[in-house]
Length: 291
Image 1 (cartoon, rainbow, N blue to C red):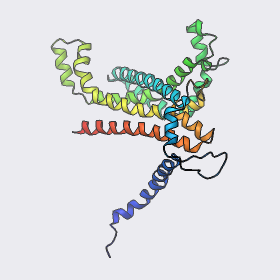
Image 2 (cartoon, rainbow, N blue to C red):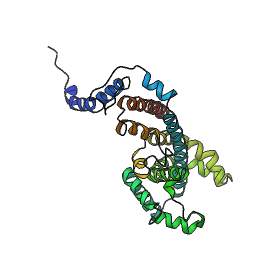
Image 3 (cartoon, one colour):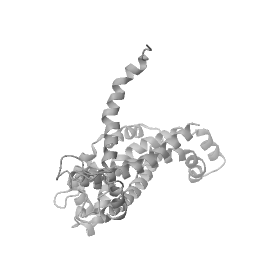
Image 4 (cartoon, one colour):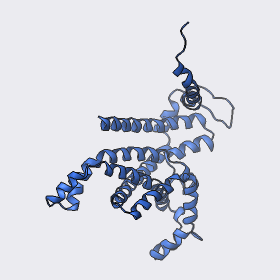
């Protein structure tokens, strides 16, 4: 009898854990997405409905389509602002110095905070009665003094974008700093000796060599923004109305507010499909960079 290799025995606990915590829920939810199940009415999944849940989501659910639009706006603003701030911060902190070293160390602090805590904090900061940020904005821009931030659709979206950018921009700045450190200094020094301006050095030398890192940041941040939930739940709760109800929040609401489990599973798999496409694109970038 052939003995099982030792490495498979050592890997068995980890493989069992992955199967129990990832593969089984994924498989079960996929099956569930093809069934009708109102948890408020029955404790077990109902009849098999085929592609009906997916078809209804894509063709007959304006709330789902609206959540896709909200998600698109949120991702676009969130990713572009994060990238711009990360690039600007990295260019400022790329120089050596004690102050810059201290700033780099402090950059990790916003990232290690819980997204739920960030949402609660921003909710207090923007409170119309005692919010510190609300008061400061009122002093700087008197026209916004009496504005109730979380009661306005546009300002609520701005609030969740600002909170997510505050959370992720410092970390992406560190990633960008790593990219800048990998660029050979000789090429930049040679361009300066030839009389190139700082803008010309950045445009023609730094930026082209930084593009692979920028591409990775864009894909990663898009993935993180697509599945953002904690901050939205604690800051705006998807409101006012449906103004900040992203696709991830829509899935949560269908499953845990309306108890429409099959429908929620189908929506979750549409979200998963988008994440898989982005993950595949990210892996292609990584492998292309490694060649």
